Length: 287
Length: 323
Image 1 (cartoon, each protein chain N blue to C red):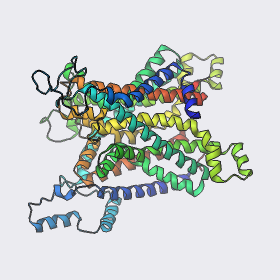
Image 2: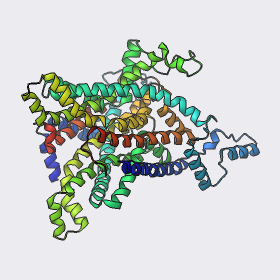
Image 3: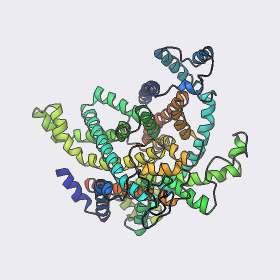
Image 4: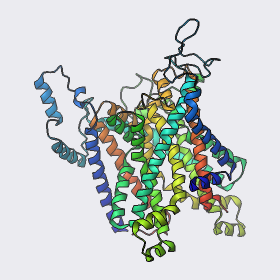
């Protein structure tokens, strides 16, 4: 909670940070209420009230602000439902990634020696794996659901967080307060989690932001490639449906909005991460 | 130094070994019987059995694993389950297609990224800098396949400047040879995915160079160059930019491996028959030999790339000591 307050205060120092903060908060709110305010269900087919015929591939109208799909689904509603998927998958993955990355980085960096070697070799193995193809293989094995997508992404994304945290731990380890804690008889675990961990919180939060951005883009890519959760709508699967129907270029109203939603949310997250990074790492701010 | 290289080489071999082992067992977990795509149940049971023996699938898993290791060591990737052609043959053509797209666009992206990043860092606080930061962030935040679709929508379908996808106009070339790669038709097809990929790739070096410049311009030697009365342009390029290049240059090898693995989405949008598309098709068809070989290749490139990056760091920055 203390860190969250610090984060909010820090990003408010710049205009870009403030705007981005409100965009991200708005998206989180939409993730909660989006399905409530959406006029239709994500897979509901809409019929013309007069002719009772399915409204297929309609351009934007008064009743359907962003038009409909080839299967007669309301795109505006799908877009609203998509906030939930992006936020849930994004945050779950980002926290999973940073939780693993921070622990591996802390233990590896502090312990050094053989523990460090083994853990860094493990990180190297994951660094060598091709990112998106690996996720697709995991999803092909486990089946496609929101949970498996989160697990598959976390499984490969922790690698970079671990390296960043470890590098930070290596330099903190040299500082006198760590030596002081050791001489007063602090155990390894207590030094790692009581003394060093609070000092890597800023870099961990920066990593949460960048992992969040990455996770949202990756989830969209997974959806686009046809490996998204078939039971939930996401911005990636909307684009996939348009792509698979081969009507995407005849119906720009179908593919343009989900892309813009991704772009706005992810760039806000990037700006947020950078705004915070500037505050905790003043070297970046120049003179 | 010699000892460092020796130890790193040893580490690379161990890493690679662990990775291929994980890959082997991972792919065996894939659902569906891969042999069904080549071995039809309409065949005589005897013929089915013969095929299984031919692919070595009759042997126990551990035995298959040993054969797999032996073959990898000799760069023999076996035969595709799907097309019954040798994987090396399939892979060869595909990797050329990917490299033709990815390599030149990476070079251009890093060149332009470093140049404009340096200018952004130098003119900190200007409107020029603010606009480029916003543009680069928006571009980086948009999924590359979506940017590709928008480009097709505008430049191919509305303006009619470029074809919507594929290597060449279907039926124009029989063989994928040098004549095809040098043809105007090929370059015409290459243009749009090339521009989209470059635009996407440029964001990372651009923003990295900018922040690297920001910390360089605050250093004493820049101040000293000013006091010496050197011209602004000379300080910018000779002193500031040159010293800011280090963290940017060292990311090249890693980003290359990452771009190869990430090529799958852009290749899908532009129906570009490269390595990425091949991997996705391979997963869909449970064609282990093909996917394994592609993973192996990317892994080797990434591991070598990381090693090269570490060495490069030492060459560019003599302060680094290997131990």
